[in-house]
Length: 390
Image (cartoon, rainbow, N blue to C red):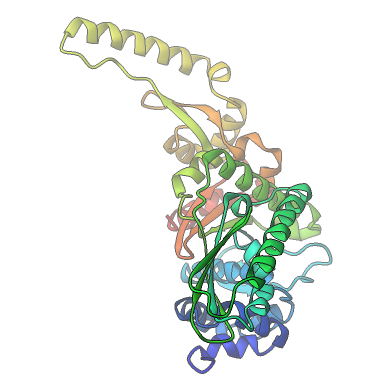
């Protein structure tokens, strides 16, 4: 297997402990291994030393997942013409960003965060393999919503860990009662359903992990806001000239229920369009049009009253963002105007962020410029470059 995915395992060989953990979880998952091998191959020759530094400081599968998200982000920036440095954890004396990107006429830092529901998997994978060592079963795992939801605090993580602990305790107990000749069997616990299929071979193996959980809109907003503000705050620890570089957050998500429209609404907010009634009665249409026009004139004439944070919008428009703000209807046009501001306007910490890159399913980039960040890190003069991501 290692010869088939040569570049990936050449890199993992620099961290034998991580290599062992990796093989326990992903052995036999050839489709995923091929994806990782191709990603590592993209960097292995031009950024070999950087990759080695990064893999040596990667001490868990969770951190390895983060590294893969960083490489997916770095690849997109390379494909857009940047040269990149993968930064070590001690690149700054304080907390370091993940990537330094250099374009022909400017440079910027990139910080990567990810939406991952795999943490319970990482916590139980080794124990499951040990439990199946003398059992002739393949075990397929399905997490309930209790273990699929992302955690936002230490309290939530402790509660989730307790559910996981209880589920594994029940699994250990029920597994002991199964005879070697037991056929297909299910063990259902509070947090996990284990589906065991008889193979007749020892040791048994861990099969697929799955979850039917889909993010409801309110939970997605809560989680994404939590992670983005956490990463936005990181810039406050930067010192001196480090703070003069644009600072871009990348949000990597494999969750198919989250799309670019969700993200756009979260960051920019909601707009409303004033309509005139459509009718076969000309007089009714005329009266409706008059009412619409009157309402529109009130909004145009009293923007501070009707449009959230209009003074900040106007200041950004005057600093070079007028066309962009008109395009997203922050500046009212064609009977469409802002009624609810998004994170870029509502959260003071977002002034630390020049823009946000959303990466869906590892390859789909969508970029969101922030017109309201601190002037020193503004991308106002590089809008065309970042608009090309979409």
